[in-house]
Each structure stands twice: as structure tokens, then as C-alpha cells.
Image: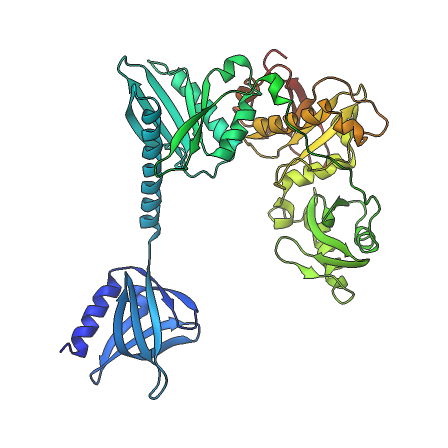
Length: 494
């Protein structure tokens, strides 16, 4: 018969085998613990267990010890005569071990895709499979045929990257491969279905020489092992066969009574965004209040990020205090430029300035009330404008270096160009009575002078000639005043 001392030693050994544990009570409440915060002892021949929970250090008598896989199960009683409670100790994976497991899973996925490559092309054999040093989410796979020809394949083994991020990584790796002693002039890209279809459209916007450097494959996961399906490059004519989404201008051009009352607190620095879901009021681009009308009943909330409260007469003074804080800290002359209100959403701040007066950027522009109807992510802001000659202009804003800027703008250009060619922008009178010129839209990439990514020009020059990109460099103190320091075309042959 095992005595209490032997049970304690065995249980202590099991607990010491992991540094971190998750303590789960029968009620479902959980507490993360280290092994040093768990104590097993013996008093008067009784096996005791103690650990720290939300009520402090609690001690219980252990009636039975069991296991479930790697979990430790303990039946304990806190007091004499109290009912037994089953608690569970679950070993938690250390950060280092978790990182190692993630890396192994990604490498395994990379090898499966490599196997799919040689299954599709039997003349090739795998030469090397590795995760990118710069980005552990990408796998770099090399295969070689009997004649010594080498191909390189890039794939996102996490299936989480945006297609723009994947494409910028492909372009940069392609540049390195072409500079090798034995160059690789064609890079293959394997991507999950959604990524692959978006990449197919993006590569369709490349000029002929840039597009020829890439070969695209969709990863098909309909069997035990993945397989590769090659996708053809979309031709210029077929690109415009896609059915465009129906557009509509905001119908509620007049603020609700509640929204108007909020706007009146800081009329110079606040604006309103109308959508089907209601009205969003922003202070220099930072959302701080929302109004929704349901059956003539106006309901409102206020607060920044997750700190939100219902707005009513009793909380209105708190809203006034919030606006005063925004006025103090979200300002070009902020009292504290490290304050969260100053640092939050800088691109939205720049966008709010230009929405208020687009001519600060270019005196020939008129802004459309179309807002964010082609994007699902609020941190990617584009503006649509028209020049006095009727030429459409897409404005892509950034306030920090972002290598995806060019391809994000290209995607937006394709969607706008589809709407223009199909007459959808004219149908909704996106610019009132102004006639839209029958020429492709221009792209204005706008950022502070030091905030353009070093590879911006490389990506812009990969695009086709009719997708014309212009670079607008702003003065670094754009919050105080918009001043264009330089404007130049960066698209190849434009």
C-alpha cells in the first residue's frame, strides 16, 4: 500500500516536470500557476495540497490522485464534512517550447507543399526546404531537375498573410534570386485559395516583364496531402469582365439630433462618417462617439477603443470631458506627444485633414463622398477624387513606412477602374454633374517625406503603364499644415 509520503513524492515529481500549470476548479474557474506556487505536503499522515487562487492561499486534503492524459486530477476536500471537489492541473507549454512546436508545424507544412511540387512536376527533386529567416511564416523551397535547372517556390505556411504582403516578399526574394551566381529568373508562388485568387488579380496588373517572373499555384487541400493547381495570368480584357459591386452614396447627409449635439462640442476638429450601421463621430480622424437610430429612437455610445459608455443626460458631462482631453492631446501642439490620443490612428488624422480640404494636397482636386466602400479594414484608408479635367484620382495615405502601399493602391485602382468602365460611378453621380474622363485613374501615394518605404519605387515600377503612380512627399509636420515638398511619377515608362 502506498503511504502518504510516497504519494507526495510522486505527485511532487509530476508537478516539477512542468514549469507552468493551469489550475482548473470544478466550477470552471482557472488560475495560471508556476510549479513553485503549488505545494504538496504531508501532515499527520494526510496528503495536503495548497495553491494560490483569487482568495489567496488555500489548503485542501487530497482524497485521491488520478490522471487524464498529461493532466493531473485531484479529488480534494477543503473542510471536514465538505463535499469532494475534482480539480485539474493542466501543464502549460513554455513560450520557448511553444515557439519550437510552431516552427516544426510550419516546417512540416512547407515539406508537404514541397512534396506537392515534385508530385506535380516529377522531373524535379526537392533540393532544400527552409523557413525564411526574416519571416518565419514564409517557406522558401528549391527543387532541381536532372539537367540542373533550379526552381524556387515561395509559400505562406500560416495562410494568414495578406496577398499584398505575400507579393512584396515574392518581389524582393525574386530580386535576390536574380543576383545569384546561378540566377533563378522565375519564382513560383503557392498560396491558399483566397490568397491565390487575389494574387492572380494583382499579378494581372503587372507589366509584361514583371509578370513573366512569377508562376502562381493554388494549394488544394481536398485530400490527405495538399496538391498544387496552376493558375493562369489574367489578361487585360478578361480583367474587366468581373461584375462590379453596386455603389451608393451616403443617404443620411444630415446628422441626427444627437450627432449634431456631439459635433457642436468641437465643430472645427470633428467630422461624421455615415454608414448603414449609423453615424460615427471622429475627432481629427479618431472615432470617439457613435449614434444609431432604430425606429426613430437614437442610441449613442462614446469612448475611445474599448472604453465605451452609453450616452445619456447623466453621462453627457463625461463626454464633454473626453472632448476636452482630445482637444488637449490630439493637437499639432499637444501638451504630451506620447499621449495615446496623439499617437493613435495617424493615417486617419491625415485623412481627416484632407477630407476637410483636399485642395491642400492638390488645388485641382474635388473629393467624392464615397468613403471606404472598397475596403474591409479601417486602417487602410483611400480617398477618391477627381481633377478639374475629369480624371479620377485615387489617394493612398500612409504616415509610416509600409512596403504594401503600392499593391494596396493597385488593388483599389482595379476596383475603381472596374466601376468607371462599367459606368457605375457615373450612375450614382459620384462627383455630381462633373463628367468623368474616359482615362484610367491616377494613383497619388501620399506620405511624409521620410515615411516612404525604401522599396516603394521597385514595387511601383512592376506595375503596367496605364496604372500611373505619383509620389507626394509631405512636410514631416503635416499635423500643423499640409505642405507638399515633392511630387513625381514613379511608374515605369509613365
